[in-house]
Length: 347
Image 1: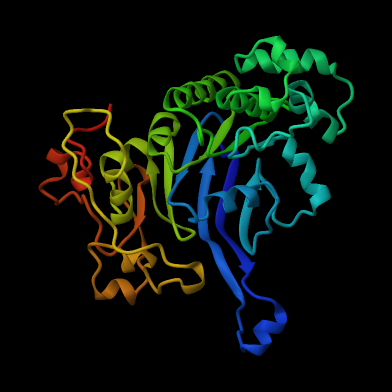
Image 2 (image 1 turned 90 degrees about the horizontal axis):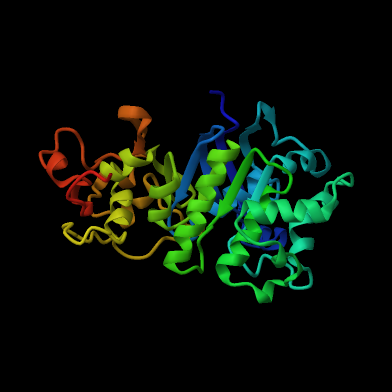
């Protein structure tokens, strides 16, 4: 199946200081790299999960895909069409096929508009006037499991879970082919998180849409994603099938994240792996492997030579001089996720 979204070597930069200050300080490159040489694909009916700590560049990727941030270099193709060279006016039609769900389920909804107006607003934005808005509002509310009476409510009258369902309905208004969900469970109770994720999974199966899920919640990724990519300081350090990455993480940073993830199995043997220090500033990006300043396995070469991308089984890729859970590791098959604290392969 051909990819719906193809991203190759995407790089996004932001100016870190004004022109006068750059001249005064003799700074030749007054920019920071928020996203560095990122590549991935999303196919129809599949979900890619992007995970990483806050500030790793996940939301920057989402905004760049939607044309809200300019790409410095690289390629973004949607259904075979290159998007990076398009003007805002030319980009607008593609936003009918790519819908965005923002982080804050309530804050992302205008408090002055009713639910009916919120979920049918995309029709007005894109100049679609041949549809009955009342009929569309009822259809969209039914799709996300809300009754027709919600159409006349305002955002402050909704619970977090209801507000998130309204956000999903709004994203589905124009029958998109790709949904970009930025922290779809943020601020929700655990039980409500499960309801929202099950809703997204059901809608994806029924509609055949592709999904890019951006989150720091590894349980969400494990439940809904076919593939996952792990970001650190704007770069993918590991990428592959979700179950393979969970079962056998290869990058030490992935192992750190997994060891901190709550384990639902009360009998699982947990061993927390800590990263040293704090996340470096993008303005002082470490040389070579960016994770070497915090990595428990770092050696001298890690600060001197940028690791190459290694491809393991099933398209599982990683960037590390000293990967963990390698085939020759005698503990790999018995510990499951290596030293990340899982005692058996997740089912």
